[in-house]
Structures are given as C-alpha cells and as structure tokens.
Length: 208
Ligand code: IMP
Image 1 (cartoon, rainbow, N blue to C red):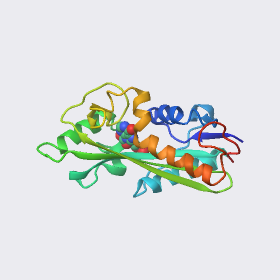
Image 2: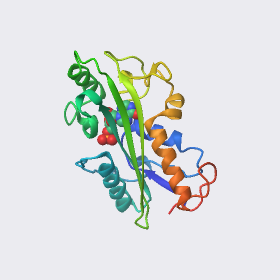
Image 3: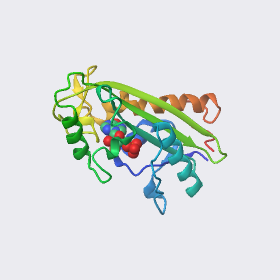
Image 4: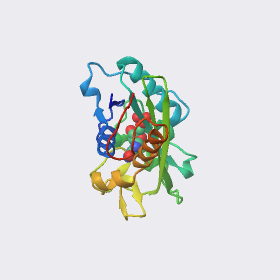
C-alpha cells in the first residue's frame, strides 16, 4: 500500500501537509475520504504525546496508516504558553481570531516578543510501528495582525528571514520553510532510513 491518511480535521493543516508531501508519491487521503471522523481527546502534556495518540486512534479506527500533526505556538516570555493549548487558548470553542486576540492581550506591555512554532508529527503504521519527527520555527509576535493567508496565529507571527508574517507569505512560501515543513522533511528522512519508502523524494514504495 502506498497511501496514508492525514489524521486531522484542521483544514489549514490538511492543506499544508498535502502540499508538503505532494512529491513523495504517497497517496494522501483525508477525513473526507473516509466515512466518519475519529474524535480524539487531546489531553497529552506534550505535542509528541498528542500526535502519537491521534495517529494511533485514526489508524486503529480506519485500518489505514495515519499521520497526525500536533502543533502550536510557544511564547518565550509566557513560559511556553499557549503551547499544547494553542487551539483552545481562549476556550474550548475558540476561533483563531479569539486566540490571537487573547494572546495579544496577554502580551500587552511585554517587550520580549520571541516565540516559536512547534510541530510534532507521528505516523502510525498498520504493523504497529510509530515514527515521529519534530520541527520548530522561530519568530517574533507582532502587536497586531498583518496578512490574510494561512491559519491560526500566522497573522501575528513575524518571520525575520523573509521580513513578513506567515500570513503574508503565500502557501507555497510558508510550506517551503515552516515548522511543519521541517517536521515532515525529518519524517521523510526517517521513512527512508527505516526502509519504509525508497527515496525521500519521488517514488514512495511500500508504506504499510
Ligand atoms: P492542535 O490541533 O492541537 O495541534 O492545534 C494546533 C493549533 O496551533 C492551531 O489551531 C493553531 O492555533 C496553532 N498552529 C499550529 N500550527 C500553526 C501554523 O502553522 N500557523 C498558525 N498557527 C498554528
């Protein structure tokens, strides 16, 4: 089998993961391709714990090798918050703009605006193996949102290397450098090392 299921309902993540993996030769399925979404409580203390939990639950429920992404924003001066609670920072049903608003409020008067996006990915294979990889990307939190693209905290995350927020970058530009790109590149290397795919680019043989 040469296919994996992207184990998330987050449309922003699905779009980016599909784009980043498009040249691997792996067929990427999404929750729209299966009957029923799998609901998983994200109660882990770390991104890694949550990613493994989600990938395993989706693989067991569907019988398809499943790739989960647990990610978020760590602000240095807030001791790493919102961290694993990034999606629910302003409450269980919070929207991206609720979360951005609360973060900006929490950082009023704070001069140290350094932050990092973290992405931990886990691929749960049908034979029980779980392969994980991490990517990080450092930036600066602005005082107000700029840009329309991306999702989540992208409009307030300024990337010094491009001089733009992640929401000002095109999808292609963000996916060429982001924490998610770094995590998935590292995952691809591990899949090749472990003989699960033949090459990190091009033809993907034997995903189980
Ligand atoms: P998760 O579903 O618990 O992994 O939540 C991830 C949350 O972290 C998202 O809902 C966003 O708020 C934030 N996040 C993760 N990756 C990104 C990104 O690439 N850009 C902006 N926000 C992100």
